[in-house]
Image (tube, rainbow, N blue to C red; front, side, top):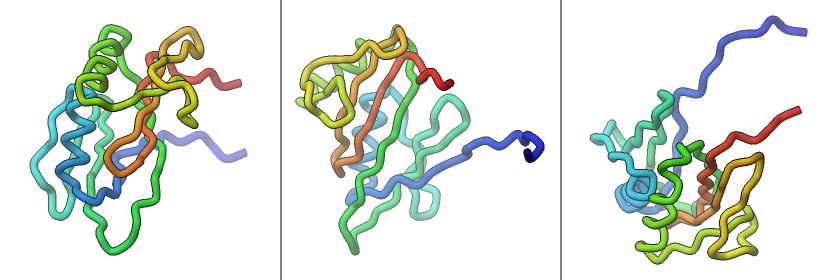
Length: 131
């Protein structure tokens, strides 16, 4: 077995049809700020040192991805209220069959919602338990 290494995710690119619209949408829901443009990227810095770099991709359809955010329990209700105020439906499940509900997985709470390009976003207050 290979020796354990310390490796961290530093950033990831999030494809968007309009980088500003998508970045501002997510930052608004999470209560974060959109950073200054960095080349073709529009960043959102997360609390753990990871950056979401929004990149405009207009030459082909956006392939939806899943992004999950571990959030503080105290901020979860505020995020749900922001989704409701924006008229965005949230779901208790990742396949969007339980609208307007949150889940209680692993003793926490969670919800899923789509961003403007159909990326499946998740907010959760407890990380998934792994065996």
